[in-house]
Length: 492
Image 1 (tube, rainbow, N blue to C red):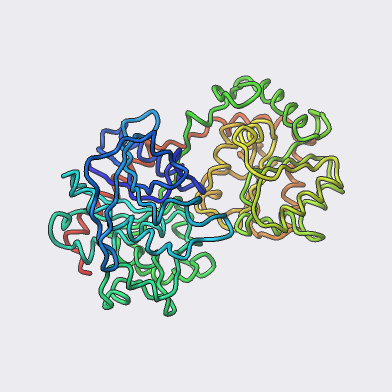
Image 2: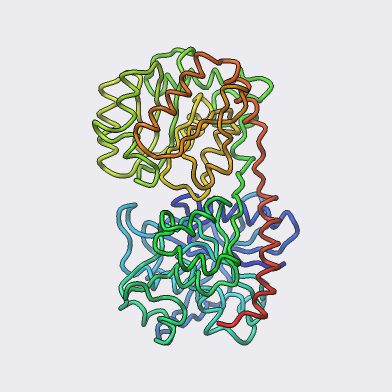
């Protein structure tokens, strides 16, 4: 198939979260299966134009009654033949950040920025004289692709091109004041007709959910959860209405980058058959964080964005979070890498100053992230919701047993421990409360001291789990085929 990925993120060019990893890895998997897949992304200020190849002649794109002339550059995803096309338009993309100048702010003109990306997808294909069977949009920034495909581009070259929208995180929907509608290049009848209206604002993701031929999300459990009021963020009714077109496909992991047998970023490589290298990684992790060097004490690691989605209130909340009670009552160590909400960063610094067995580093460092996965015995991931999650899969590959809330992709990838049989690959809890989290971590600590044979067996089993992007890609191909059939019969 010919497939165009339209995205706001693609590793290594632009990344804000797991979306960038998923788009690039899935595209490479498609290419390896023989499909002609290409990627379209803005050229943000951080992407060096001198390292890209310029295409001849600029692209003309009309948005909101204005014609924009856009330069197009190209490159390839690393270690692949997947072409990547970059929209070079200084007015919208020549600035720092993907969505805003910082994680706490977003640009007021984001509707215009990403409307241009979505409209440009059609013009780029015309310029290349390459017409895909599938437009694959990702999250709210490219949700207007199915809108344009079902309205302005309903006839002509793209009348048979199917549209897929993947929801990576329903918590982010692209909601903006109605005044931006006129800049999208649509007739006002589409304000309601294409599903853009949302409490008298515009909601870009809602429009994509309404108009895409098929919908996917990044794990089977999350596909079910988002159809409920508790996880639907106001979209559950619409998603139930479109449930026959919604499929949950579990993300894979990049096994070249995340492989304890070959990882160049860790102290010592190791395998399920020989875990001695993991012990060396634990020692270095303790040294780097200033933790007491003691192989007999269980070490809990965490690498996360410090936001409420990640369960930080229940874990780090001052005077009520599980972490402080753990430090004062359990024989265990905790190492955290992360940044985000200011109150949480301040609390991590406070806990680090009070307890020798708790240390945190504010920020993000790729080598540290790998070392935490390799050197920890357990991995903390108490997410309030988790569409798929990658870190728990990295942890499993590195023989680091996850402690997780039973939700989304966490429920699909971690097998709960049975202290009777020793089976399992991690520790799970159902209710996200400080007490439940504390008790589950305490359960893991108990198993560490009282069932050491179980812990070793679980680590080895976890390392045999396979999360293949090729398997995910084949499931997407089945959805594409289904969407092509829907395209021919669907009435908008």
